[in-house]
Image (cartoon, rainbow, N blue to C red; front, side, top):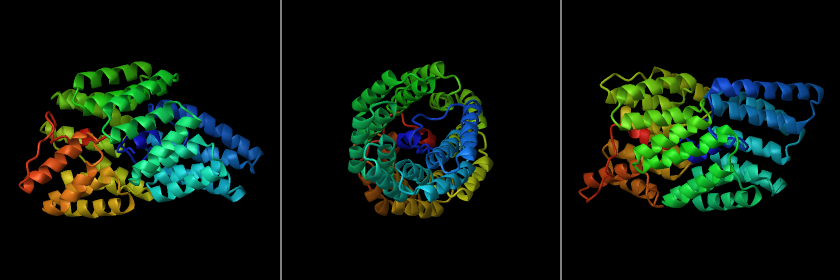
Length: 401
C-alpha cells in the first residue's frame, strides 16, 4: 500500500516503510547504505561531542527507521528504539523526538501508538508537516480515512511537495478516484527533482496503470522510473509483475531474482513464489519464513501479511486467526478484505461477506478486493462480476506494494 511506501505497504508492502522524512521508496540498498552510513557516522561523531543533543539523537533514530525500510533489515528498528529512547530521556516533549517515536511505532505496525505520539508531536509543534504525515499514514491504517484526509490536507497546507502529493494521491485512490490520484502523482512528479523522488512518482504512476489493467502503460512507467534512477528496486519489481501477468514467467522470475537479492521483503518473496507456481515450479518459502522470524524478533507485528499468505498458500484456519488479530488492531480496508477472504477460504462465506463489503465500501477500485467479494457473493448464490483480466493465480501481484 502506498501509505506504507511513503511513510505499508505494504501493502506493500509493507512492514518496513514508515518514516517521517523519507518520502520515497528505497533505491538499491548497496547504493543508499553508503550514503546513509556516512550520514549516520557524522551524526554519531556529533553525538560523541554533544551527547545532550536530543534532536540529533532523534534524527539518528529516524535514520535507523529509514534504514529498516531501505534495506529490509528489521534489526534497524532495535537501533532506532535505542536512539529515540536516549532522545526522549533528554527531552520527551520535543516534537522531533515524538515524531521519531511515532514513525517507529508505525514501522512496527503499532498504529494506535503512532497516532497518539504524532498527535503529541503536533501539540508541541502544529507546523510539523512530518508529524502530520505520520498521523495521516497511521490513521489510514486504522481505517480512519476522514481523519487521514484531514491530516493530509494539513500537510499540503504546510509543505506541499512529493510527500504530501503522494499521500493525497493515495487518499483519492482509496475513494475510487483514479483520475485525481493520477493528477496528484503528476503534481508530485513535476515537483520532484532528486532522481529517487522522480523514480518514486513514476513507479506509482505505473502501479495505477497496472491495477487498472493497462500493462503496457505500467511497463512504460516502470522503465521511466529506472531511467531516472537505475538502482530503484521497486521499479524492477514492477517490471517483473508486468512480465508475469503477460505470461512471460521466465523473464519475470529472472527479474524477481534480482529484486529479492537486493531487497528480500515479504511482498516480493510471495510474488516470486506465486510466479514460480504459475511457471509450473515449486515455490520455496524458506527465505520468507526467515524474514518472518526477523520481523517478529524486531517487534514488528505483521498479521496482515501472514493472513493473506496463509489464505492463499497455507492453512485457512491460521489465516483467520491472523486476520482477526490484524482487524482488531487496524480495522482498515485491506484488513477487512483479508479477514473476509480468510473466512471464505475457511468455508464461512456468510460470515465473510460483511467484511468484503466493508473492504469495497469506499469505491476503491482494487481488482483483488473486487475478486474476493465476487467469489464470496457467488458462493452465497448472489450475482457477481469479476474484474476482466484479473489473474487469481497471482493474487500477491494485485496487492499494492
